[in-house]
Amino acid sequence: MIKREGHPEWVTEYLDRILNRQETYHERLANFNILSSKFRHGKSSEEKMQLQLVDCVAFLVHHDLKYHPLMDV
Image (cartoon, helix red, strand yellow):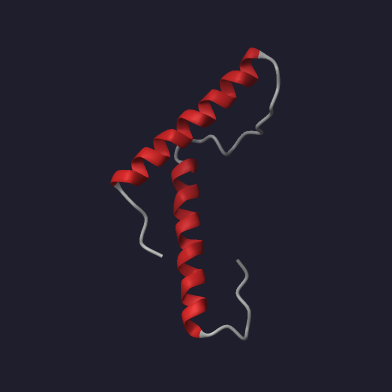
């Protein structure tokens, strides 16, 4: 989403709320410290385990959002 100079105020406020939700979501992912390392799609068992870890963390964040939702847009 790009905020432009000619947007009405309500559009700017809406876009601000969307960006805040995205930052909150990424903060929750960052709490698991999975965003700090490179992610690779490989064939080794370690890389497959990393993919499973990312899936598990995404599930946990999704589950958490169900009971601690982000603000309404």
